[in-house]
Image (tube, rainbow, N blue to C red; front, side):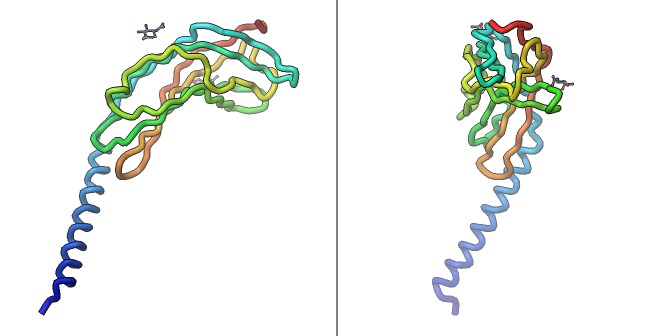
Length: 167
Ligand SMILES: *[C@@H]1O[C@H](CO)[C@@H](O)[C@H](O)[C@H]1NC(C)=O
Ligand SMILES: *[C@@H]1O[C@H](CO)[C@@H](O)[C@H](O)[C@H]1NC(C)=O
């Protein structure tokens, strides 16, 4: 004769199995969604551009970041973390990556936006390599799902350059 507790245990095991299966299907179905995000970043102004007393170049700029990241959102998306980075080469490093701005997009309704902002984090070089420097701006995203693996990708925007002279 099965006790009540034994049956409850069996039921729970069954429920947990179904739940695990549903989670697996959910994250699997996410893989079939091919997102097509778009982004554009315009540099509106170089606010100032200086060599700091310690010898590091630093620039302050204002950008207009516009993006449509709605396609990153599925019913399994918890939130999306995004950041804009300046990427450039110097003789010392083949890749310098400086994060300039970031945000958390909590829902699909907020995933199509533009923002006029100056850099939230300092754009400082490790040396004094920024005059006339060509650089890329990249919009990176990390999609945090409700269940399953996080995934990350980026859009690379090319063809930016800094002024030849400090100002
Ligand atoms: C920023 O860019 C978006 C998209 O190109 C545009 O609609 C918006 O007017 C721009 N904002 C400013 C302040 O230039
Ligand atoms: C900018 O991105 C392009 C395309 O990914 C790449 O070929 C180039 O080396 C990058 N430029 C810099 C300065 O990082």
